[in-house]
Amino acid sequence: MLKLLPALLLLTLSHNAYAEARALRFSINDSWAMPMVRIEDGKAVEGILVDLHQRLAAKVGRKAEMVVMPRMRVQHALDTGEIDVRCYVSPNWVNSGHHRYIWSLPFMTQRDVLAGVTPEKLEPEQLLNERLGTVLGFTYPRLEPLFASGQLQREDARTQDQVLLKLSAHRYQYAISNELSLHWFNRQQPAERKLHIINEIASDPIACIVRDAPDVPTMALLRAMVQMKQAGEFDELLARYR
Image 1 (cartoon, rainbow, N blue to C red):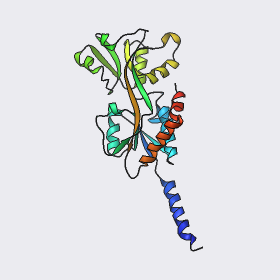
Image 2 (image 1 turned 120 degrees about the vertical axis):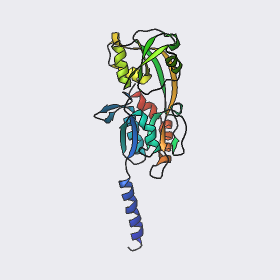
Image 3 (image 1 turned 45 degrees about the horizontal axis):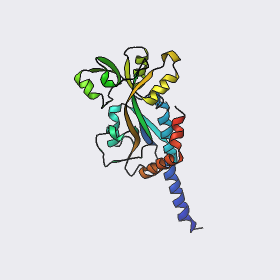
């Protein structure tokens, strides 16, 4: 019996360490809209990212804590260790890499589109003296020269959903939206009020950034994402919200 005590003690300690492992902290940008996330009373309650975060955390034996914050705070929070994982981000949106975190493989593509109230096909460069619905703090590289020259004027709203609501109400004739949010918005509109894709303005690979620190199962999370990609789990998840 005495010979079994060290093994039993090690098993107990391992079990306690597993049980006491803290939740993984995932950032949620408060300007996102469905189908990415729905936020109620400052909490993320449903959407693609809620499902993704919960699934990723479960695969490494943790719970997911979703921290809602303004977009401008997210990268700083990752750099300073306030959050562990930032998902739905593109290398094209981050100025530089950092030794404190590691990129995952891309799990989807975001397409930003020029949307309008009428079906037509034109390039954004053809617009002149138009107010364009945009999300506060978001940058649109293709359009920045047009904003800088005064050819187009930004009209910012706090969230992507608010941008589309204002477009639907004809507060302006054109707006920028990611394709997923536009399709989700149109699901709730009668045929005569559906918004239209006029042109694609950007296409970016979307991935996660995982903080590389002893208290984060960094490599396990990255491996889990590779396995999810190979098993088609990302496509399955996205299909539920299309």
